[in-house]
Image 1: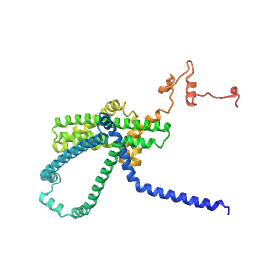
Image 2: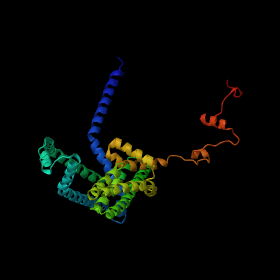
Image 3: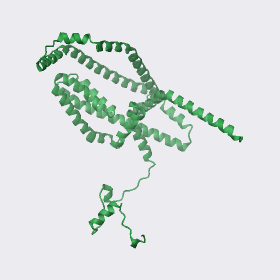
Image 4: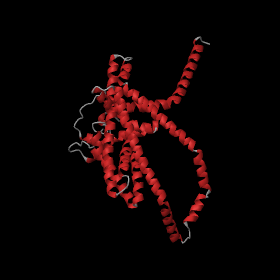
Length: 381
């Protein structure tokens, strides 16, 4: 046995053990790393406001606290408005349930010539086996729901805590990061950080402005139709449709349609039509103008980035995919050398035909990729 073979075997086993340990640690800490990533992008989003307040002489810690307090108050206010709306609608539906049940039973009796009564239907529902099993399963699942809620609150608190430290100690964090890099790399890191702040802040700004416009437009519609809780529904549509990618529009329009259906079924169709029309107006007119100077990426690239982010990190990846791709595109754009495009009709999708060239030769040249047929005159058999 060669003398180097035992050492090589020990080295290979040590590397394999380190790889397994690193993989185990990564999978154990993936939740924490995801929370830190969310907190970092949240800190980038509020960095412009914090820096502006700090530029006027306010301490960064106090400025960060005031920004977070404003976000917290806005979030609690939205949840209270939405909760009161849902609670009121649930109470109304419970009170009107006997009338709905009577109308359904009358329709069944007239259509199928039956003699059902509301008392019989209620007794059969209350004493059914599936209802008892459902109540038992719901009772046993209360603990799981409570655990999930507490875990979500703890995760939210962790994200806000990390985000507060990232925003309040931003200069110190950048200084600590640059202290381990040579001066040439420090410039690149600071430039990438600045681009990330601009793109993330621009993304939040453009989305907030579109949410305001969307909420105002839907508020006018709901007021005209006489749908209750129009302010809360407008806020719901504006926020959900803009800050939940891909499926946010459908989630946002479902709740106003449901509430409008309780008023008049035809109102739900009006709301559906308005949501579809406004979505087209937003995609092709409003969004390109608002995001052209903030998050200038192609719609296909944005959609692909959302799909890729969802596949990698779920809902978190969908939320941070667009600002991350916009930052990467802007950072790499400085290192890609570009040239002036020549004036050629083929750039626009056309073909450059030679004057006097026969049609058959044009077709052969197009099929052959622009080349010409070789023959004996070319020196080839």
